[in-house]
Image 1 (cartoon, rainbow, N blue to C red):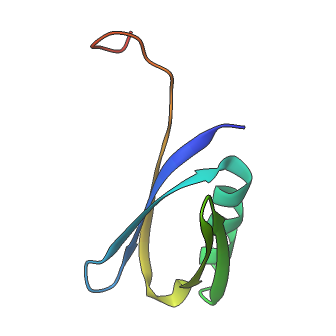
Image 2 (image 1 turned 135 degrees about the vertical axis):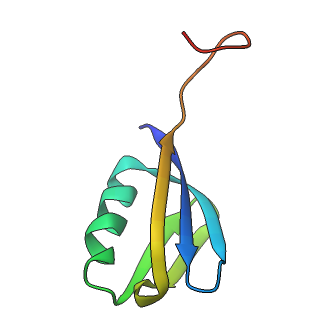
Length: 71
């Protein structure tokens, strides 16, 4: 499964950086619309998020790269 680097920004400029599988990210994005609490499972445990405080979710897929640049 592909992992994505995800930054979750909250009101007050706090940012939570995690690595998520595609299914977990999809679940998070669907839950953000509801604005309630959401349990997010990551490598080292579970994070309970108050989604009413989330102001953005940014993701970037991890890709295997060789060398100094991307082609």
